[in-house]
Image (tube, rainbow, N blue to C red; front, side, top):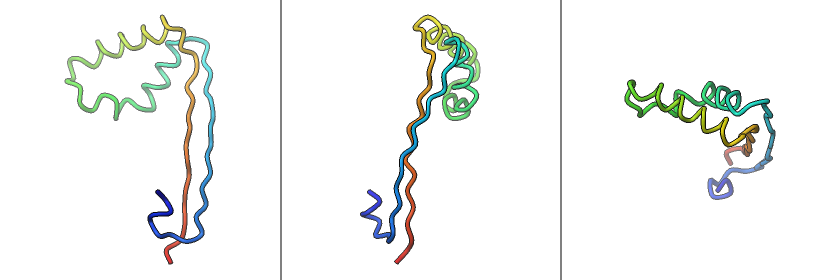
Length: 79
């Protein structure tokens, strides 16, 4: 995709990191804190709390303890 832009001197690198937490509830709390504006943007306000509680319980029940971030950075110069 970056090659199709016609940029010169492309530099592309990938970074993967993992955030481990003691409980699924803490995983959800972190996830909600960094994504809630996007995640709940289209929810009716009266449904947000209900969904948050349901999703937090799911993370805990399923033993979800890790969030993995996989990011690709790319840049180049205009010819």
